Image 1 (cartoon, one colour):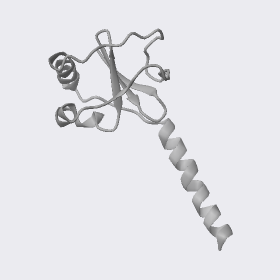
Image 2 (cartoon, helix red, strand yellow):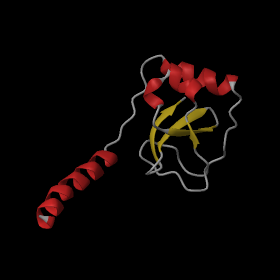
Image 3 (cartoon, helix red, strand yellow):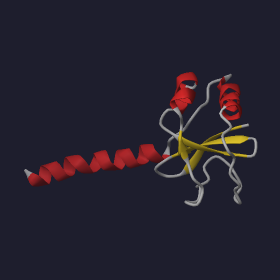
Image 4 (cartoon, helix red, strand yellow):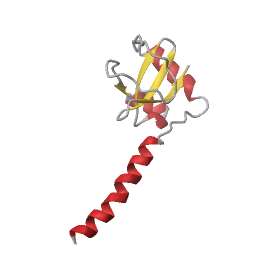
Length: 106
């Protein structure tokens, strides 16, 4: 019985890993403006980064990520499960477990 359980559990772990690597975030048309307005209205402080910001890049541990606030999620629900930071005029959404950039709103 224990061997059968092991064989059943293994594919689930592998599938879960594959899905985590393919995580994508699509910001709906018009929501980019709402995100920028939120950042300005709430005076979100930008951080300085020394790496190129591009989708798929991994954010170093030294850059503090913030959970997306409920007020932003209420207007832009697709960003619910991610974290973000602001760099210059860019709002960068990151997958919290891998720290990979999923979307950049300018």
